[in-house]
Length: 425
Ligand SMILES: *Cc1c(COP(=O)(O)O)cnc(C)c1O
Image (tube, rainbow, N blue to C red; front, side, top):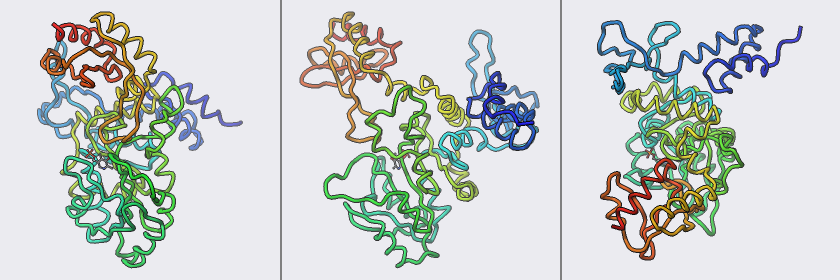
């Protein structure tokens, strides 16, 4: 008898509350094990690893496996006032679990990595990676990538803190594979921990320029770590209804960078990923494990609040549910929709509808304009709007106050119209 198709088995699991790719994983594993009937148990087991609220009736008030002190649960309408979570508890076995089992493994799945580790921010991810994998050894970095990202994150300084030795390669505007190869020859392979590629993030070098690609660097024989910064999960943006937006064209993505041969990628949780402040290290399992074992990891680990928010984002990516990630919901809104909303707002408060330019911001996709729309009124009302309740932040341009609707939740359009009316007096 032929085994059933992965697709048919996965469809039979549709009642289990997991994104489709995870049901497919369970179906595929069950069929590969020659036991298609085990697919349901496998999927249920995966669902049980997700971070969720649990009721603690053990009498241990600060329960380490349950995230120590519980989080407030709102308590409105007679609901519970606190909730614990299975932060470090394996609900299937009742034994000690790991806070790496939920958000991190889902993110690894979403970007096609063997494993992933979550820390507090990407600065921490880079620091931990360098300390764990290259302490007392050389790390090759292009002179064109010795960047300052902002907020005091400077690659040479982070390198010094990690105990790795910076070896500068090439020139500011041009660095070729041969430059890396020469540097590797000079330091020796045994003395070289990593090649580090750093996304320039908040500026561009234009003109007479040349960079080595990740695929080229992967031929050198030392692990390549790519700090891609912004956390674009997949350049194909399968979670968007249409093709990838043009303004993303030059942005490195986790999945494609790993496919090109990077051993690890590091990125922020709160840039293009659209999740909470966090840093992610994803890629080869042995290297991720080495980072996880390093003592710094204990100092950089995130708490349950962050991991829960990051799990939500990872599930939204896997479920291709863009509406659950505010950044992508905003980024994917067609300009015609924004214009229609701007007309409604303008009609309510006597403003003028205008075309505007939005940007990703946060040091992501620098210099890329995103067409947008909003409303404008004469004069500088920015201060009055900012002091309102709720505060509304606007731009002032050519003696006009401009409000761009791309970053406004449609549910707040009425509040914006009222705030504008009030500010005009
Ligand atoms: C933003 C960024 C960082 C710093 O990330 P944080 O999450 O703010 O700590 C590091 N490297 C690159 C390339 C970045 O773009």
